[in-house]
Image (cartoon, rainbow, N blue to C red; front, side, top):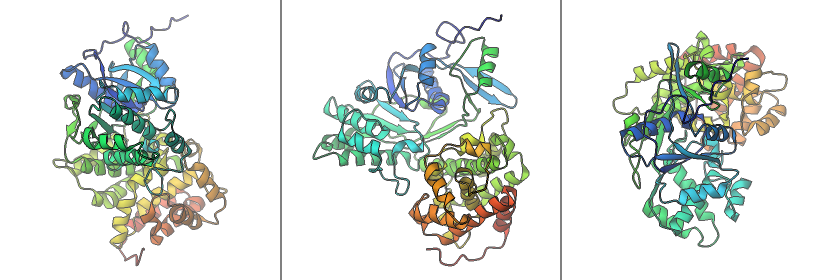
Length: 505
């Protein structure tokens, strides 16, 4: 019987290439794969550059899986950088503790109030900010937000931030920076607005001290993060065991490419993340537009088309010439005109990198993973580029295809089977959208109800009948003729001479 390899830990496996942190200066909310392959790696580089007080207290939202695995491994795990030519491995040891917020929300509040913590970073996904899908404002109808406002241990990320800042304000009042690393437009300003809205909703003058503290000692810089980090698989665990000779129950894989652009506006000291390649810039908005639209927006289209074609991974999807053509068309004709590129970025080089990254078959990035939470993600990605084209008299056919493919995956019309990869996608709006699909007469009816009445993609697109009609047409094409026919239709229409769309509002 073959003996199991020893478990990764302080006494087994590769030694970290950085000094051990002496204290925790960072609280991180959202202890998922992305954080562990992105911010944690940059923090390891910062520790190597000097200053050992930047350990990370990692907080998982609800699941114990990563927390338990990391605790059993002395808070260590493997990062495997995977490309078609091979893999390289590192073991960051930057976390000083890990726990689950849902089990100990009071500890989140207490840690945030600790003077030694000077930076809070967040990767809780777009869905984790408790914002209304239709307005983007704090969702006061969310029962968890309502409960957090009444008092007690807060269950939502915004509630935890607000209550932690309240306690810090009433204590030392030491300055602190809250740094969102999620794919939200102007994520720093959005996070601040949501926290302020929460504090403003408290009864009487309960939130007044904390609001004044925010004015004087709290910064909410924006940031843009970029790295493709797939879900962990048994195959990855086997690869780590074979290459490193240890058992790791919490490894993460990532592409070699990584980027982090941060607004240099901190209320107190910060780690030297530039040692790992982070860019401190006043052009975060431009980096954000470039990434959220060109990478994320196109990525969504590739995922939904691939899932509908029965394809499991992004690399398999983009390998199809029809999907590749659709991706190139949406990228160049519908997203790029809406993007203000950062200084020094060559558009065609960035574009080439995107297609190389999507084609990285060694990663095994699944269409179901990329397509998850589309109701939240697409609202951040498609409205402004679509509106820009509509107001110029042009129909954004590929953005309409993205929405049609998304709805066909998440809320298929009766009698249409989107396939197993679409069914594996998780979406907070799935139940409501499925109900609408089941009672819609055709694609146009469904599109009207979802976009115009439900305002799933915001108020402005809800007032665009040309776009809504086009989405409905493509839903029907997917249902009756298949996704390949919808791709051909969209590309042909996008290449036709432009004709005015008439009044869209």
